[in-house]
Length: 145
Image 1 (cartoon, one colour):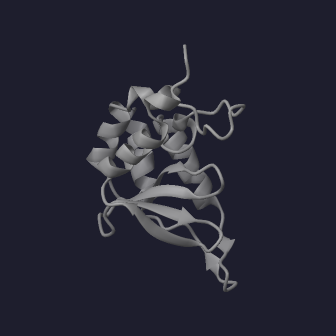
Image 2 (cartoon, rainbow, N blue to C red; image 1 turned 45 degrees about the horizontal axis):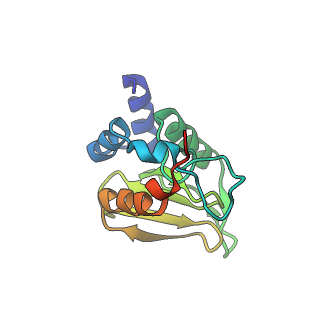
């Protein structure tokens, strides 16, 4: 993680990146680096780090830049811009994002659902979210080396 990358991400989000999230990136759970994305799709060679919980700061920056680059029309036909304070930390693989509110106004991990264009809290803390991902993609899903 370079200081330049951290400054850029803070600029994108309008605030500092939470220390708990930076610690997670620095100590990313090893078993998630090799866990396959889904037992339902055995031919899918993507792993958890590629989608649900991004492991590399460069990927986090890229997805946050992408979300902020365009506006969308919400179901009411109004223009929707990605909220500046929401840091995207992963995605579902089907167009939804997982994110953190860097201001702390909305604690926990939110899921942005792209069809209704709404946010919902899916974990009360980042640690709880990591536990959910570990439970879903942990050692039983690990790829044999």
